Length: 247
Image (tube, rainbow, N blue to C red; front, top):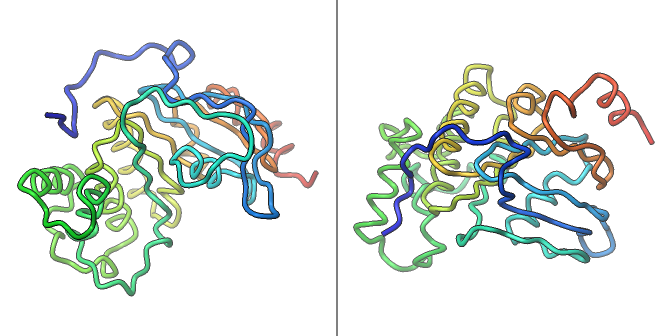
């Protein structure tokens, strides 16, 4: 039986030497009448944190959607090396505060992919949810309404929902936006721990601090790949000046 949290592994090889968890070639994607991504060629290294960086409208969220399988490419190919579907954690704002959901119910939704929304949770489902709640340090909040939580607590609940999907690929859309510095540091430490446990993490982010602490970066501009590689090579004053200037 699969476990959600794997035995810690030895120190991984440098990012450049790791086997790709995802590879995409000639990738284009978008929405009806609005192309967004144009001919992307890159890979996501396994057992690493990869940051997708770029201005608003550069295609970060669209690329996450393609990796998650919720947006179909219009051209090119995406190859996954893993045998589990990715776990996708949307922006906090995508989950409405008006929904009368407790933290536990929110996390339990991560099990719907395996059992559907109408079947009663099994003993194993309950165990996975309990483990995720404790791992994220929010077990004591299980009975609270999601809308009552602070930004950092709510983000932890959504990540816990992702972990219950037992995927080795976790996709996060702006996981630290709107959080205070302490909460951002806690999320960054958690992502590092998850990689140690055998999870590949991809996060779209505007937080350059989070991007600089990642193992690899993909820098997007207007739906095209502007740079890729180690953060110190990608996130430079010169590159950022060029990217955030009008075309």
